[in-house]
Amino acid sequence: MFHTLAVPVIAAPMAGGASTPELVAAVSDAGGFGFLAAGYITVEQLAEKIAQTSQLTSKPFGVNLFVPGTRPTADISSYVDRVKACAAKIGVVPGEPRWDDDNYAAKLELVLALRVPVVSFTFGLPDADDVQRLKATGTTIVVTVTTPSEARQAQQIGADVLCVQGSDAGGHRGTFTDDGISPGGGELYGTLAAVRLVKSTVDLPVIAAGGLINGADVAAVLAAGAVAAQFGTAFLGCPEAGTAVAQREALAEGARRTALTRAFSGRPARGLVNRFLIEQGPYAPAAYPNVHHLTKPVRATGELEVMSLWAGTTYPLATAEPAGDIVRRLHDELTDVVNSLAERFKRS
Image (cartoon, rainbow, N blue to C red; front, top):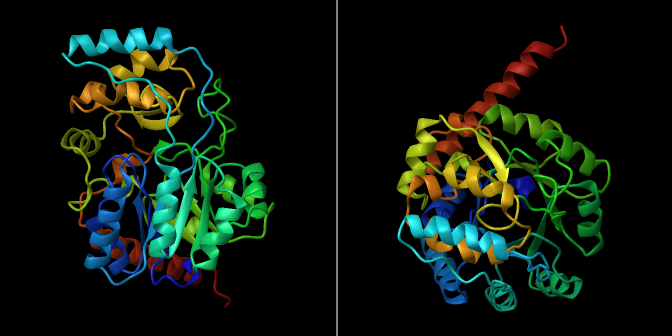
């Protein structure tokens, strides 16, 4: 499927509100491919978003599911106390630090029933039997991986395509397991390095993701062996995106550095550095989604210094254009790069 895109550009699934039906439809209509994010919403909300997207575009689009992990065993009581103290200062009550599976089974049954053309999985591997059930309906299976080892595991359960996520990516790391020690939950590879390593390990098409922002980046990952480039941060400033106002302003300002942190969710994720990240990050346990539920009311205040401001490392280069214009610009930039290189290295 991704080999035949008019523009080899994919809009990443961004859970938490950024990925909207309008954004997905605009990207798909412009010749790219858009993903809806199923994370953090109910089954009913997901069904509504799929229906809305289908009304907005006749082009295919995908849905991304969070694979539930095991219940964390870390003692988070001291972190609960820290978040309570922070929340009290801004007049809110923290959430209950509970574990849940994000209604995974029900969401899986929904995408099966609706025969969604492409279903991607993040944070782990779907069951091999579920993969076969999806394939039987004609669905293409994409698994997000961050290492060659994860790529091998994904190939073994029947993945059709791999989304290879480099360490420059904004938002959550797609690692299958979090070591609880290193900033990224495990070994970090840059996007090009990750693509090359995975391509040398498995014989599957790969989508490159992480820190990509312009057409030259698309050319680079295609040259490294990817079939398409996935963009998340590049679309956060679009009018179609559901990005919070405070985050839009911080992204447009472009003055903050990014860092990996477990502060907001208990799982490594890259975002703009703010007060909450600095003060709480060093103490955050590897306890997802418990920490996510704990900090949710704090983040929901919309106050810049306590929000999770997910963004990739190249975010200062992002623009606030309509999504379709971004896709068309990326295509033009890619074409210019390819033509320039062809001219430079053509045989005399």
